[in-house]
Length: 531
Image (cartoon, rainbow, N blue to C red):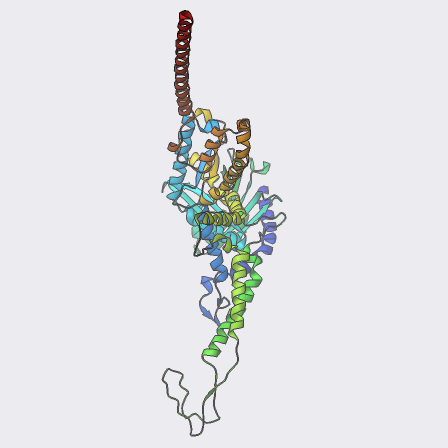
């Protein structure tokens, strides 16, 4: 039976993707080779352990430390690190809308805290730091009643993107036994020839290609429903379609460390510091040998002078012939030179490759509270670009996928009528986001400090300042507890009462002034009449 035309076209495209992927595969392998010991190669083979090329763990320590800092700064589970808004301040202040957004946030946060989100998010950052790209996905499990996040091994993914980074096609190869294929897919969908050849060999291995792409005209006759993304499961050996399914969103999300046009391989900090890592390993290896030579130097003895074997144990005894002596060979190894070079290379990897110096707060014996705040802000500004790329490239797509999954399974609170047709946007309120927004608050403070003296001379310039908008904006910026801030309705009501009270006071004062004037006028008239 001839394979279908669209399957033939897909197989040709996969072949092209493989050719392109092989170029980046070598780069992935180099980055992994010098960063993480391969657990499958830790056995002893010819010439020693197969991972004995790694003598220093600075590179991977830096990878994990930066990932830990970024997780703590962006999605710290001990804080409320995100909120939702419509972008319309007046609409957000509506009581019904406000309650919905609060319930929406609470629902999403509960599902995230009850899932493996943090582990997959941190694993994604680690992949970005090593390979330059990470791949992740999320799905809701009706059986477990929770979100399941998954981190995909990007070095085995084949994909094609536009120059601006938009994903068009992604494909991965699964190696399954015949028994696994029968259990995963329906036996009626398998080719008869395939069943006949492998029925007696359930452990025989076969390749299944999972090919995912944006829906095209070619896919319209293969799947029902309005799905923007389609995936095909193809038995490679027979070019046979095992399964086709549609997705309402991109099923696998890719995020780059530093996206560059016309490059499929994103240049990770590990890739940029490979030369330093290799040099560092060489120096550490030499340093170990030099230290060993210094602490336990080789021994020089005269020919046939040792009666028995040399003893190198503490308090060991070596018997030599009379007149003979044992002397250490002084190699003159300068371990201090290697130590200095090692320190410089380690600092280069940590601070210039991963910018860890910007994540750490420099502490001194005497620091004022103001200085601590300034140093923190300076530190956060130094890592702002990395945080921005993490939020935009990895965190936001994940959060959007979470919302879609919860919405598809009807787990979100009902949408108010007033919000139908409106977009709901995510706003990050983490420690780093607040620090970034604090810069805008400082700009406002500088403005007020500048116009303050001018306002004393000309109070009318304060008419340009909208105090209500400032209070609302700053309260929202710093994620102040809503109960601390009065609603616009309460403020208007209070102002109305104050205006009425003030009007009454002014009326009473005016009546007193009129009565006093009448009294004085009456006394004046009496004096004039007596005269």
